[in-house]
Length: 461
Image 1 (spheres, rainbow, N blue to C red):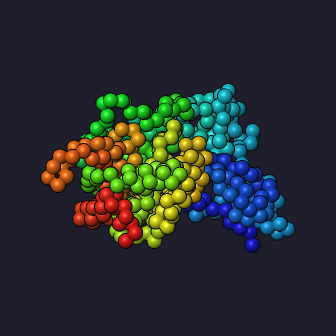
Image 2 (image 1 turned 60 degrees about the vertical axis):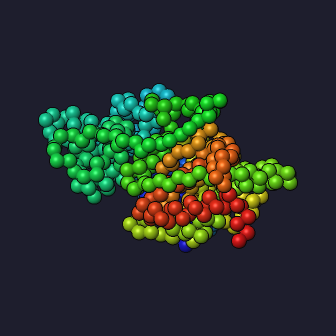
Image 3 (image 1 turned 90 degrees about the vertical axis):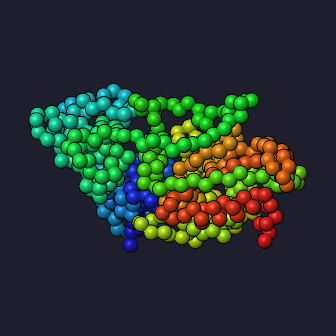
């Protein structure tokens, strides 16, 4: 029996994946473990390896297609197994010269995906009339052009019954009873994104204006002695607006979280004296690679083991407890934000944990993260202490229940046994999804984590 090639799910909340390109064509021999295609998810672009050795056949998805996870998009026939001789699947066949209009060639310096070329040929679209974002014409560009042309040829008619919108925006609009045609989209060519869909249908028939929600207060204190280094270097423009695809995806996901997740925040100042002593002892033993982040990951894993509700997720309107503790670390790169994952953090010793963290962060900064690096996290830590930030509120990364924001360690005057004393203090801020965690559970977790930081030997208990 042939082996199915499916669109993989690289995250619990992932619904679709975009096929960026085939690394092998139909009829090519493939070896198990060899990359055969590159896909884009809501996290990162990754290469997918062949799950068997044989011949790639019956490709049914084209480059640029958004494919539901779990859908079969090709088959791998074992060596010697009978396979169809068709050279190319109809779904990826680029329109022939006879089917395409004479002016279908794209402008100089602009490429076109196979699915966009086929769609342009089917609808007699001149590719020279399309102005894409960047230097590649994709399916969404052709769809937007067709919609504009239909509206232009029907003056006075109502807006198209199928306005340009993301699948998630269409689902939300249907659930909330909102007319997509009445929404002014913020996406490319006016496409309606999930963040544009209001909570309920407007009372008036007037177009819905995008209203930015007031921002929740974020408190930061930055050292006045020396300005903090920038979080990001200036990104190289990747399109007409200079935004990378990763940044756009990150913006949409965080906007969705900000809109849909009922956030609440708990903050606590912690004496980091024992933490500094612990790290100093490790460095004295030659373990200079161990960072404060490594120590925090270790202690957080212990606290999560005692408070499993903080390690749960909100999935399909119910709470799902995770069997493992996989801690993600927020890492800033040029194109946006990645969250590499330390799997089974509670089972790793400090040396192994530190080594694993260094590998993951290194690959993320080099743009070489694998699918496994970025999937499966059950809890996230965001540490901005190295940038001089004292405290901040992080946005929950769905479907996780919480995220821990960590500020810098700084000397402050505090009361010790009723007397003023200078201690190295740090502020922890826990952002929680109130659908999963209530205030009492969040406070109990934060209290245990603070106790572990102030007395790391409690880990031995």
